[in-house]
Image (cartoon, rainbow, N blue to C red; front, side, top):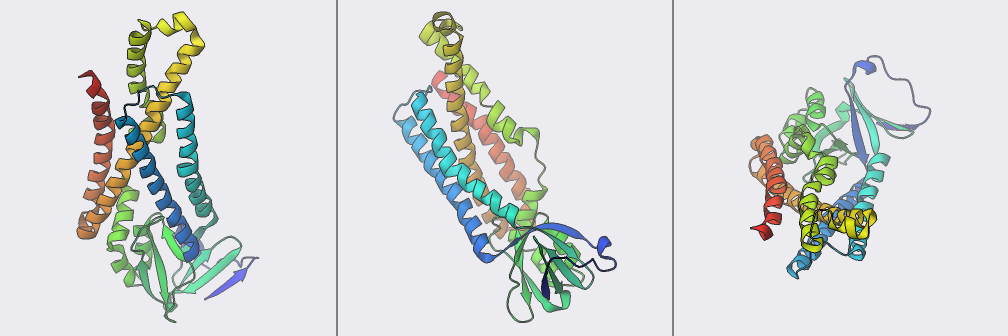
Length: 303
């Protein structure tokens, strides 16, 4: 096994036909930093959910004051967006290519190339916790792990390519964490799972209903505020309602996503062979809670 700085040597004969995988090559410290950032995002989201729930219990009106909306947006940026940007930057920095050749693995990072003879690998150790994604460590004959741990977007395909030369690949493919990550990767997402629809367009439904009710109650008609105060005030009020519901639904969806992922992960450890069915159930739980449960909660004041 050796690492060489640029210039990168030409590929060996037959390398072009060798399976090639896009991976992330993590140093343990960087992986821990990324994991900590992901945990921080989840913790901050739960904190914001608790603050929002406390406010609703104290009787805040659906139309939240502009100053409070600005404060919530700043909290979302500081507590949720910035850690996610850090994760994105680290993932971009660790992006690599892994080529599985008949006698070796070739790992190409930024300016560095590692060639790892397959005969020097004694085992593949899947991550017990699939964060920031499903991955594995290479155990070498020396008893040590290879300095980079590999996160694969499609672990089943990578392990299948390795199975002929490394028997431990078959066992790694059956690991609950691997099955969990693979099932999540294989799940087919629909248009209503996309953030633009889910967090952008869908909040327009409760926004329009509550805004219309507000206009009738406060100004006596659907266009009462427009007639009295003008188009600018009318649109600002509508935007305030949209911000309120968009932020509320974002936190609502995030809370149930965390709950569903934890439940799916626990069930996959107990029943790894049912990973696909568990993933399907988790995704439909999130869909039903969001698209059916949230409107039902918001409709309660009208019942």
